[in-house]
Amino acid sequence: MESAFANGKKIPPILLDEVEEQLQFLPPTAMAEVGMLSRDQRWSLTGKAALVTGGTRGIGRAIVEELAALGASVHTCSRNQVELDQILQQWRNQGFQVSGSVCDVLVKEQREKLIETVSSLFGGKLNILLG
Image: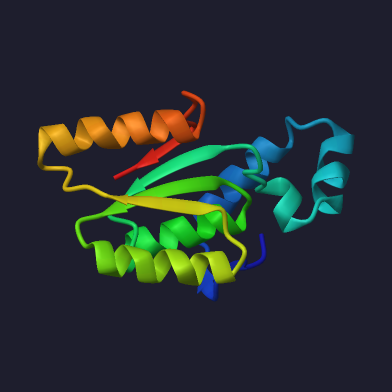
């Protein structure tokens, strides 16, 4: 099998062999259908509700942005109101469906309030939880 790359990194041949082996079990039309789908169609999170704690910095922020870019409605929390307000405004300017609230997840009462908020926002539905 030829070398393959993902995000500029070489995929190990053993992994490629495993993928090739699994592909043989797909119906012939499946590969054609997958090939015709855009990235957004294959990875669409439209209609999904997500909660990302600590979503205003670092990896949490990147996760919020990726989920929102894929169409999810996202709620995040931060311990810092000013930081939260600033990033929420940036996300709104980008057209992302993101809301947020202040919460220190180490404090039980604040976690309970966060769950109430998220439940109210998403009609009791939560598809994705990342903390």
